[in-house]
Length: 49
Image 1 (spheres, rainbow, N blue to C red):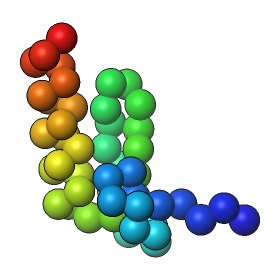
Image 2 (image 1 turned 120 degrees about the horizontal axis):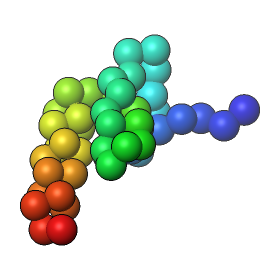
Image 3 (image 1 turned 135 degrees about the vertical axis):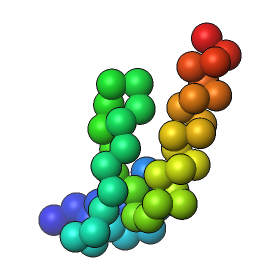
């Protein structure tokens, strides 16, 4: 079985994972801090496009 990890920091995910949608794709992160970092990175990428 493959262990799922946080899309931002590679920390192993448990039942409390948070889903974040970026560019139409949903990823899971371990905490709200990682979710905020990904949302911020996604907003920066959208602004640059």
